[in-house]
Amino acid sequence: MDVFMGKAQGFHGPITAKLTLENDKILKAESEHTKSAYIGDLGIQRLLKRIESEQSLDVDVISGATYSTNAYLTAAKKAVSVAKGKLSQEDALNLNISLENSKDNQVDTVSSASITSHDEVNTSVAREAVYMSNNPDLFDELFDVVIAGSGGAGLSAAVESARGGLKTIIFEKAGIPGGTTNASGGVIQAAGTKYQKEFTDFKDDTPKKHAQLWVKAGEGRVDESLVWDLALGAPDNIEWLVELGLEFDTVYGHAKIPYITDDLHADRIHQYKNGGQGGEGTLLTQTLLTDFIKHEGQIEYDSPVVALILDKDTSSVIGAVIEKNGKEVKVKADRGVVLATASIDHNPALAKELNDQQYYDISNSTLLSTPYDTGDGIIMGMGIGAAVSGLGGCIDFCSRTGNATNNQIPTIPMVLINGIGKRFVREDSTYAYHYRAIFQETKKHDAPTYMVFGKSSISEPGSAWTSESLKADVESGLVIKAETLEELAEKIAVPTTNLKETIEKWNSFAANKEDAEFGRLEGLKEISGPYYAMLNKASNLGSLGGLRINTDSQVINSFGQPIKGLYAAGLNAGGWVTGYYPGSGTAIAGIIHQGRKAGKHLAANN
Image 1 (tube, helix red, strand yellow):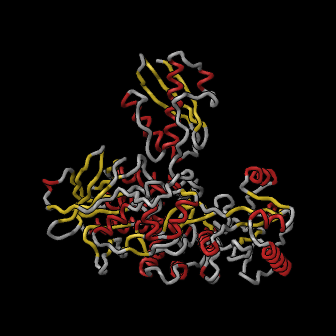
Image 2: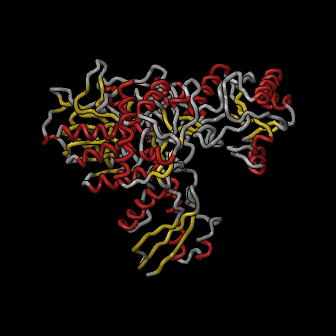
């Protein structure tokens, strides 16, 4: 037995393949890569098992972690070349020496921009419902509960269902578990918890205040019963996650929503140990998956749910059609089907019809959600008469600066200007609120918007730049530099008079320490040359809106009645958040809560 190694570049850093070979057989496949490659690691671990099982490197990459698993295969093939004497061990570990058949044009889903067609294509795999007899002998597989999707919502439903004694299976469209929840920081909003009392100054905050803020943020378009149910249940969800093994060690708040009074704002974003950054939501999904498997739950990958099965006599949902290995499999669900396939993030046709901002983002923004979020659950639900709710708005933010993503990152002295050179929004308002305004101004003037700041701005707290990084961004073209406002106005194609007037007005506000136009509180300092402008380009973590549900996560039809046997949770469900995303931790709070409600309701009817 001999060990050979090869190295290739992964998305998060180098990946080293270690192969133990004997007589050309792969006895063991191992990988060394950065611990921060949470999503890639899920794919690599599945890939290693596949390689050892098939005794070959001639295996498919793992969907959902394409870049990382492809990089591992490249590194492994370099190791084999060492074993065959075609490459020295030194060269195999040199990142600058690659194999001719390596592929480097793919990316991990939820790790970087996805390339989306501008065509108005319906990218969903969903099909029309199938009507058949409720006879077990007519089905290929029998379960109590079928769950479509293994993100936070699907996994939460699965845990409660399995704990309730139900035979439960998850069918995951991708090759790894976790969905877009993996791409998040895993943070969760809740009010009145012991962690909030321990880690913040908000000792007397309540779920009632939390609900009131969320309802006001919904601007009259949310289902208040869902919002109140979520806010009241959020503290228990935190304790449930602690019982599962997560440890919360930080609580902070989101940036302000301009029209909501200070007494309703509070630090409510709960962060677990080693969480908080993009990709660290994987720690949450793995915690849920571990408990689900412990309770004899099953999960199958590369197996999308493509259609619902309805009882031909009662029209209740009794199962689902799964596509596995190119074949259709009919799976019975005695208790019900839970749709947890997120929203319409990567479906141009559906976005054009249902969400203008998401449709714009598909072509113009960086989509960070998994490309498997194509509205499958929404289409399947609508196909059998389900109502939709809360459609509109996105989870948009500036990934370059992190501006207003939480109240720990103060907004620097800068202004956001539209295509005619004028301010249009309070810049220190929570990120998706001001990005909704950015979208609206872009559409109104048919021209881009910019963040404008000065040289001294980058030395302020909250700055994403150093002198060196700003210089690099200017050289790359990401940031535009000008010595005068006249020069800057010409470079970004806005009226010079308006831009000069905007900066002069801002500087007068800064001198008086009061933003008389929008009421901004942070970064009230003058902006002076040299001047800089950065195009506002959103990073998008998903679309808002989905199937209408009740507080048990049952899907509601157009007449306000539950569709028997059908549930939806998380961003597959609508009505609990809409218009704009009110702040970090809202999505995971809803995902966990509604998933749990679905699983518990199914178990209670066991």
